[in-house]
Length: 326
Image 1 (cartoon, rainbow, N blue to C red):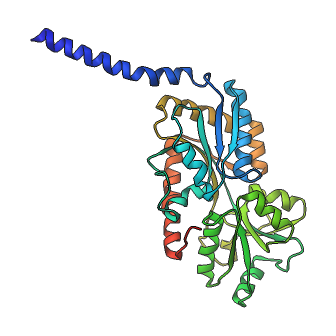
Image 2: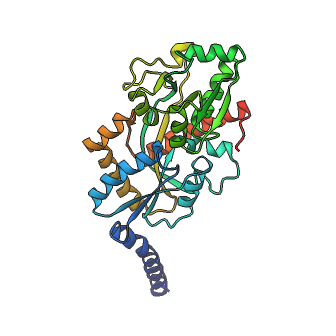
Image 3: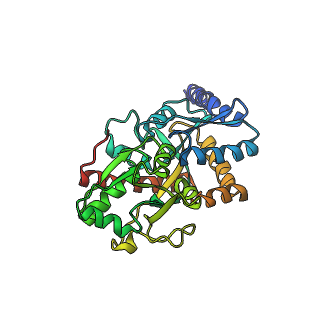
């Protein structure tokens, strides 16, 4: 009886070990098998695309493997995110997401993936103020001019990177606090938005400092306010929304890297380690800082806690303001 019991236990142990071999082997072989793909979930030209390319270039150098950026925009980042969630969890496909990732679950209850169950956060790349800006020849000289125009029942229009984007929600929240209405003009990413903003085709834009600052520096755009509780280090003369009479108002932009949920814990840890090394690289930090991004880094657990908080915060705004997806 004891011999049979021992034999059964031994067989079970061997079977479990055999099941773990493919995952262990995959983790050991990573990343030598094939090029790594980083899916930027917005079109070229916007902040997600630029962040993905900055990360990919240095990551490729570190790990000695090609890292390719693939743009898969649409549905406020949901199309690209869905593609990653449904991809093989082998450590060769990752998503670079924007703050819309924290809005999409409440804005679109029929997402083709479960934000919390089908994806695992790898690292929080960084955060940044969003900036409300206007063309340099615009009638709006200050943030107060915008609010006054809205209170006078003028048609005040603003563009954001997409319907349901954080910029859209921030303006909806602000409109409710100021008891005014404005017209939202959704675009398909930061590139198209800025193209129209610098041409004066849309009176106001709200986007990350990353996207807007180059056009402020060139003298084509005038910044009116930033959406964080403190002024942006890169735009020290631009007041916050809170300073303009809306205390406590805060809506930061943010970027993160995600993997399919069933990715090996070993690969998750190794990729997190590599990404943190990337973010600590002086050249990378300088490029991100130059665009107004405060580099964060940290563990997958820290990234997950941040994202969960964002999901809860903006779910309330969506509900309270009755915002619907396109």
